Length: 64
Image (cartoon, rainbow, N blue to C red; front, side, top):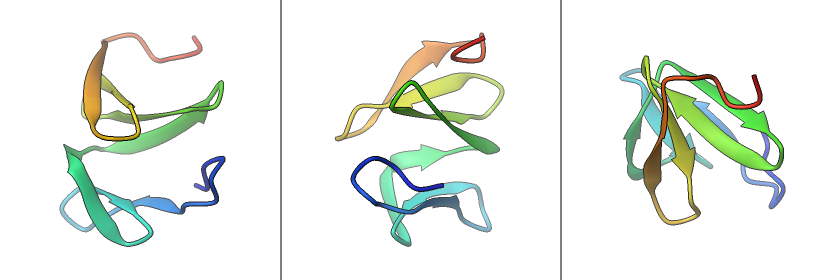
């Protein structure tokens, strides 16, 4: 997925959250979601990207 700044977000082979191919914020996930201009990662709990790291969002899918 591509964020508003044009960065490409993917998940690595081990679930690492990758921004332009670099593991950022120490994050891991099973899926990524871009909604409402915000990036989220899920590992059975949702995490929100702050621009500097990941914070807990909660168990409910964002935007649901």
